[in-house]
Amino acid sequence: MSEFAAFWSYVHEDDDAEGGRIRALATFLEKRVQLLTGSAFSIFIDSDSLAWGDEWADRIDEALVKTTFFVPVVTPRYFQSASCREELIKYSTAAKRTGLTELIMPIHYVTVSGMDSAEHSGDELVDLMRTYQWEDFREVALEDPNSSNYRKAVQNLATQLIDRAKTADSKPASLMAKANEPQAQEALARNDDLPVDDDTGPGLADVLADGETALTQFAEIFTELGPLIEGIGNRIEQATADVEANDKKGKGFAGRILVFRRLASELDEPVDSVETLAHAALDRLLTISPMMTLLMQLLRSEPTQIAETIPTFVDPLQSMVASAEEGLASAEQMAEEVGRIASMSKDLRPPARRLERSLRQLVDTRTLFRSWSQEAGELRALAAAQKEAISPSGGS
Image (cartoon, rainbow, N blue to C red; front, side, top):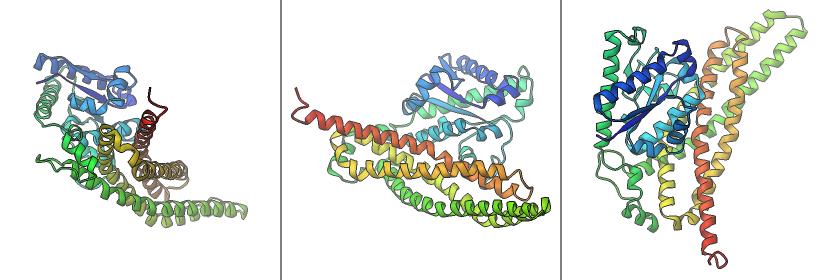
């Protein structure tokens, strides 16, 4: 078995609350794997460290191919952390793209609502997390680290990592590698369908077809979301105006309560719709992402095709990203406003918190959009450099 490593994704406030036990668990696990394998094994603990930045953010696909695990320490605060949510999205899309989802090993450290249920939790990323084979550490986390129960639990985590690493090492070449195979490049040059693989996992053609369908569905979802969010904003504005009018009439808190109660009732139906659409939007984007990355990889491997894709792929992609960024900025602004009104009345808290959670999930999609926009910009730069190289003045 080749050497492997892991990224330890956790919330610093959780570790502080635990007196450093979450970081200590990573160190304990690291040493246990080293003992069992006799090989080098490192867990990158701090996301602010240079090692994390070098190995994770810039070369995530390479890290997966090198059998690098992603180990999120799951707590309620994990899903409240924007950086942790971003890490989960990035690694999940890369793992699905490469067919190496066993390299994601969540540790359920503190009970998170929805992790034990097959029902929709209300948070797409909670639902995503539980699709991976996670380890239940909730009871053991309360044990003394020097106890036999704790040591046995760490032994189990170490064994799981080793077994999963062996499984990953035994798998055939990933889709990213297959994208560079001659027959895939020839199909791209001829503008033909990509060859279908014989492996049990999804092939190149499957990934691209699924992504294309999901892209159309996502556009439809975003079209529906715009008027819904605008309508909710109008209702909130009207309620604010009604409160001011009642205050001027001297109706006091009783008048405010009536306005808030009416607003809560009016928000129920549109919030239901936003919840459903936000869930669907992130689900579609997680399907689109592998397609986007494969196309980028194919085009980089066959630079002569880039210029032809500028008007048909790169331009529409960057236009879609710009439009989405505008919509997501509105969603983020509304999420902040909704968080404020939730404190005004107990009647408003349930719909307001549901809406805020859904809007935050929409904002999660920004991570993927921005990565696509960056890659599209790089393709445009490659096309420009290629054009300059082949122009009469570009040669030597």
